[in-house]
Image 1: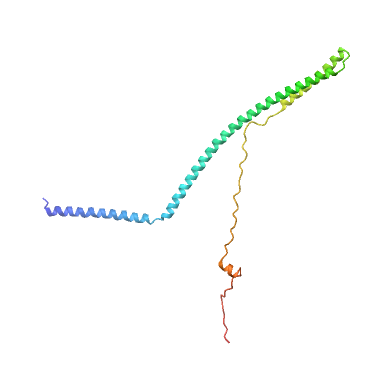
Image 2: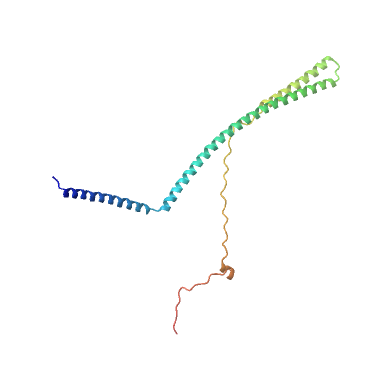
Length: 200
């Protein structure tokens, strides 16, 4: 059986070992903290800020590009709709002008027939046939003109981007010094580097 003194020695030795382990852990932790504090804190902070700044700039660029792409698509759709509406307006304008001019030609033909002094029915028929031929030729020419017109492409083509040159820095003049104000702009005084003496 173990005596009381032996038990106390074992407990004491266990306490010493535990205290040593705790002390060693505290020392290692403290030395690790000291070595960590020895790191260049300003450099670490600057590096962290630079990384965060780059991340923010990349996120801004990406969001701006995506928003720009969305706006470009909306603009393309709106321009396409307007181009199509313009083409429809041009077609209706062409048809309206064609009708107006055909009507004017028909009225002019009727006026010529009324002014012409026709003696026989055969002369009347000959004049009417020639005027009808002229009227048909004019209609055919107007139809050809309307059919040969090629409207501009109804597809939006973006223009190349405009590149702006960076501003040229303006050199700042050197601020005047007190010596310049007092003595003016003088050449620097020469300095003696080597001196030789001769004895007589």
